[in-house]
Length: 129
Image (cartoon, rainbow, N blue to C red):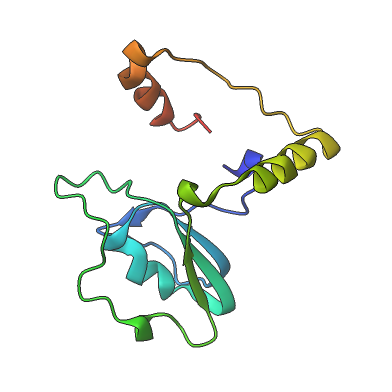
């Protein structure tokens, strides 16, 4: 992920980030079980973007149990990403960005539908990004 431009990546252990650091931006990939802990690591004016459910739990859920909006640090922001908000204008802006900055977007591997499990296994590898 660092090669893709991220400053750092952190793993959680027992649903807690293993750092005392605070950040301006957090991309929350694991899910509802780690969101509230991630928010405790957010700087004032920082943004956490909740994007999915990658926790691998058998009882995967999309809601945060007993969510408390006061768990969002004062002066910080919580947002989420959902692909249902995509539109033609945004897609065209993205294409222009890729063209302007000559961003390499070639896929590393291509899988057909029959090999979906192979695609997931490839994504699970440490060097997949």
